[in-house]
Image 1 (cartoon, helix red, strand yellow):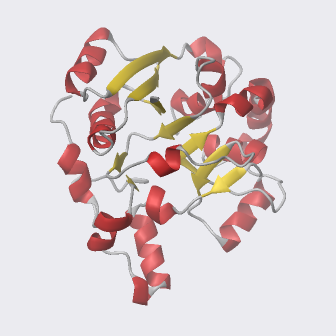
Image 2 (cartoon, helix red, strand yellow):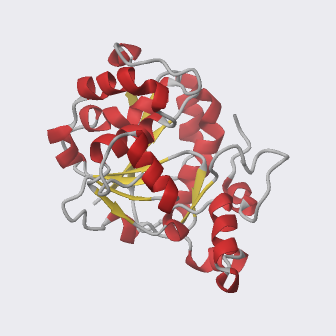
Image 3 (cartoon, helix red, strand yellow):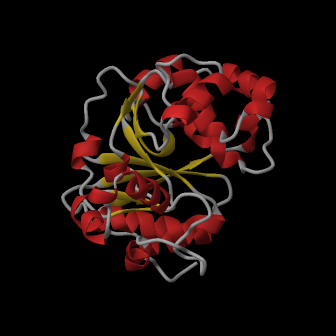
Length: 269
């Protein structure tokens, strides 16, 4: 049975998407993938470029996200409409999809995702990682007025229980919340998932499934006797995530994870 993968991209991220999706395909050759690509601005030549550069075990399925879908959605200067795509996924995906792995394009999958993909939701809507603890979890609960059972997750890597999400998603209610609370929101998609579904999340280890250089720095400061180094990453990690502005394709990148991006990079637009 094929594995379902969900991504959202625009023209500017095609090259990075190709590095991510080929890293997934190369390191999971025992699997075939239906990759659902949500987009607004890809043209035929972009799709031809992508098709030329993906592996044989990747089947691309494009979902055009008409801007009319976002009528009534607040516009966010710092972020494109792509921030809303994950919210619409349960509505836009075909009924045959009951679970899907969402992956950001600024990451690399360098090991098998079988364990993650087949994980039991245990009644939850999401399986994901949190990269914050203690005070910041408390602060986000206060900021968005939720209880202690809500966990703030990073939405760059997450298993989505599409079958159950279809039953509860209410985009009108979500947009109403954003319009009223935009002034207190930071990362709109993460804030929305936290507010509406944060108490229905199964947490997994970010060292394994959502590792960034920033996380490595914080972790190594707290546990100097058990530091994450390059050997540990090679032998234990599954998914690397280049969070924030620290991107491996930029000259000012700092960290130990750059090699993984360049291993899979496609030198095309």
